[in-house]
Amino acid sequence: MRILKRVRTFLRLNWESKMLLLEAYLQLARGRYLKSIPFSKVASGLGDEMKETSFSPTASNNAELARVSKAIHLMSRYTLWESQCLVKAIAGMKMLEKRNISSTLYLGTAKDTDGKMVAHAWLRSGPYYVSGAEVMDRFTVVAKFAKEMKH
Image 1 (cartoon, rainbow, N blue to C red):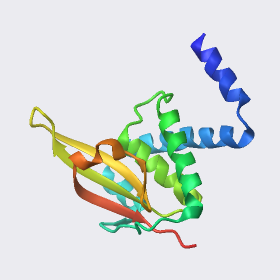
Image 2 (image 1 turned 90 degrees about the horizontal axis):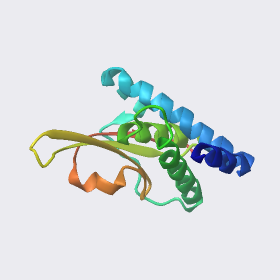
Image 3 (image 1 turned 90 degrees about the vertical axis):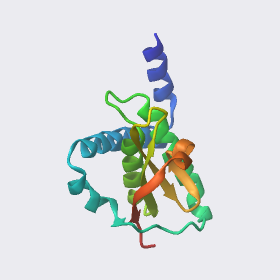
């Protein structure tokens, strides 16, 4: 019954929203695939290593950043695979790249309450955090990748 309700809700959306959600789903699949291969082969496609894009806001991008962020977070709950922080960050970066919007993907590490090493990834564009911001301050940045887009 819940599935039928969700399908009906999806079908009621306008064409643009449907396409955005479908794109998010496909980019999450791509992100999950990229997570499954050795990171050394993926890193070069993420941008300039150990560089950051500008923190300056671009007012014209704010609505698009919010739409991409919302689509990624929403669709990550419905994937048939794990779509956690790194998968979401990669998906977001690729969606922003398509829209010619610069972004920086961060990788961080920390120790959990048991003293075990844990990792986290998050994505930022200007001052806006597209994914992973909720716990990013618990992590020490160990790598960052800047995807600078030419306007």
